[in-house]
Length: 231
Image 1 (cartoon, one colour):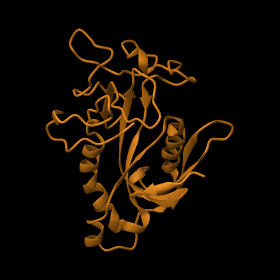
Image 2 (cartoon, rainbow, N blue to C red):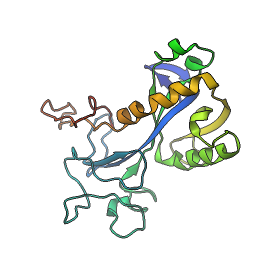
Image 3 (cartoon, rainbow, N blue to C red):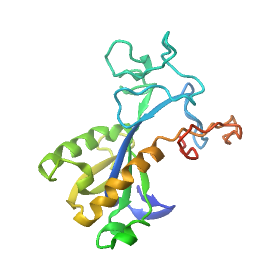
């Protein structure tokens, strides 16, 4: 049975959240995943949206290097795009060798609804990583908000996120469902929290050694906090 967790505590197979901001990550690994062993992507990109991403300056092995020194990810099927960012390049299945994993910063619904402004300011936020197999579900949900929110904006929607097994396939997926509109008094906090949420979601990955431990000589990127994230 799949369970959602917050701060290592099981909270069930679904959660209701207010979405604050979104980001996009791409992750390429030269070697196959070893179960139970953390690893840093050999090449990765982080940003506010998929189009226009380039390899992060902290990457140990940037792919698709150009004569000008850049390493653009590009888009599938377009000239100049990274060969690993093409469908049917994955080791297994029809996906891409460079995996897409959108991110959403959220606050739990029960932490913000019915609370006063001072309480809301102290609310904890959580990063939700969307598996590649759930990107279509997320896109469909965002489109549905055109008819459900005043400005077709995901920040205006309280959302139910459910983790379930994929029908007729291995693994799991996330499903998204509109619950209600975010209370008006919560919107200013969501908007003001957005820039910090984007900064937090685009921090570089930790530089892990062969033993899975973080290297102490990693240089942080200016303007970004301590790196987070694991495979």
